[in-house]
Length: 251
Image 1 (cartoon, helix red, strand yellow):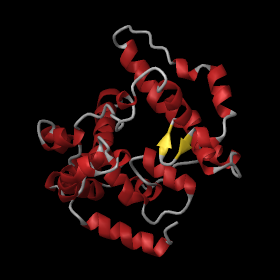
Image 2 (tube, rainbow, N blue to C red):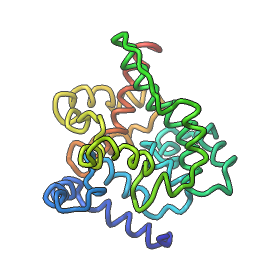
Image 3 (cartoon, rainbow, N blue to C red):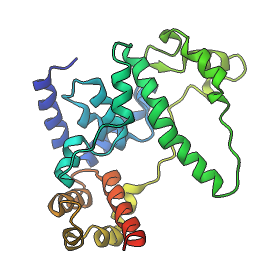
Image 4 (cartoon, rainbow, N blue to C red):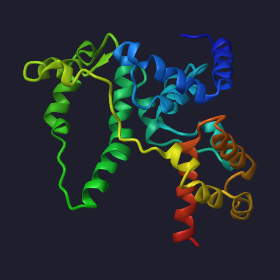
């Protein structure tokens, strides 16, 4: 709803504020905010908010919440543009649907199987543990697909019908609370015990020899992250993992 020029100006203003200052201010007021604004991973949310400002297309808005690099950043970093895949195909096939339904459908076809369920499967199989997801039973999914959107999301609250049902058996204070993720403190690791590994994996001469990533852009991200000017921990982690994987398997 924000006009594009105003959104672009807002994004520049937000990005000009040091993340450390924003995080410190948030910690001071968090307890006094409405519950839905009491997030556990504020740093990640703030980074995504600054990226979203000024964007108008639903597909791009959603893409920014689940990806660590924008399309333009990928092109600047690699000189290549990713081709269309399941993500773009699903948005095209659901054109004309309500926005919330489109987002949920994209989640079902991409983020759920390719990210969340993959993580659970790998972590559980590593310790020979069988995991079941009863809420993904096909009969339950078919039933949920036919429900009106007002029973799924209303007044800033998700899982409306599920919470109403749960409230019959469990005190609300046990489940009406800020969402807690399982994120690792990567941003701290990269400034602490993994700083040496970061500088080694993403050394400009190494990237220049490999020829896949622009060493100037990567060096800028590393410098901004280590100085606290910006939080690039996910992006840097992705690049580190690629470099370590490439060195082991491709030589």
